[in-house]
Length: 422
Image (cartoon, rainbow, N blue to C red):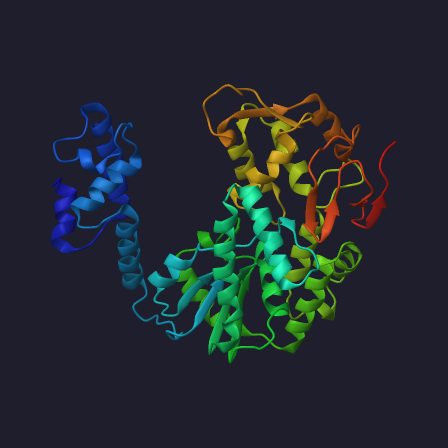
C-alpha cells in the first residue's frame, strides 16, 4: 500500500484532496505500466484505464467497495469535525421531498434522519395538459419515454412509484419540500400543493434563490452539507393562501392558452404572490419558452444559438455550461434535458444547428457544432423557425404546432395567437 494510503489506514482520517491527486498518479501508472497482478479484475476488461478505475482501486485498498462510498464517508467525517453542535431535529418519519436526488447524500452527511423522496417528472418540459391525473401521468410517461429513450414500461413503473409515494404524503406526520427558484422546482411545488387533497400534520417549505458567498447559485446540489444544515432553520410552514395560489398557478400552466399564466407573471409584486414569492419569476422564465413573434424561438433555443454563433469550435456540452453558468437568467434544465431540447434544432430536413465533425465517433454533445444558414437567418429574424420546424412542441398545456396557428409572445411577453405564414 502506498505511503499516503497507509497513513489513512492508520489514523482513520481521509484526505480526499490528497487521494484525488493519488488517483491521477495511479492512472498514469496504469496507462504506462498496465495493471499489476491482482488488479485486472478491478478494471474494465478490454478498455483503456480511466480515472474511475484508479479511484476504484484506491477505494478498495482502503476497504470501501466504491469511490462514491469512500467519498461519502470522508464527507461525513469532515462535516462532523466542522459542526459538532449541529443536529437536525427531523424525525425518522419525516419525509424530505426534492425534484431530483442531488441533495440526498448531503442530507445524510449533515445528519438528517428522515426519509428522502425524489420526484423526477420535469413539468418544465413536454405536455402538461389539463386532464385527470391518471391521464396526465400516462401522457407524461409517453413523453419521458420518447424524449429520453426510456422504455415505456420503465417510465410507467417509475411514475407509479413516485406518484404513489406522493399520494401518501397526506398520512405523514411531517413533510418538508426542498425547492429552488427555477421552473423545474417551482412547477413541482405547485403541482404537489394543488393536488394535495389532505394535508400532512406538518408541511414545511425550504426554498432559496441565492446563497451568501455563492456567485452563481444554480441549484441545491452544488451546496455543501453544512449549507443545507444552515438552511434547515429557515424552513416555514405552508398555509391556505399558498395552497390557493398553487391551484391557481397549476390550472393556468396546464391551460391550452397562456393568457391566465401570463397574467400571473405580471403580478410578481402583488400580494397574490406573497405566499410563494419565487413562483412568479419562475413562471415568467417558463413563459419565455413559448416562441417569440420575432423568430419563432423559445428563450433557451435563442440563447443556445447565440452562444454557438459567438463561439468557435464549441460543443453542445460547452453551450450547456455557458447557458447554465452565465447566460440563462434562471436556468432550469439539467444536461440531459438540454440535449433533448436541442434535438429539435439539430434533426430533420431543416436544422438550425449542424455538427462540423458529423463523422467523428463522439457522443452528440461532444461534437463541435455551428449554425446552418437557416440558423443564421432565424437568429437574425429574417426567417421564422416554426415555418420550417418539423416537431410539435409543448410548454405546459400549450401545444405549438409548426406551420399552424399557435401562441407566441410579443416584445412585452404578451401572448398573441399567431396565424401561419402563407
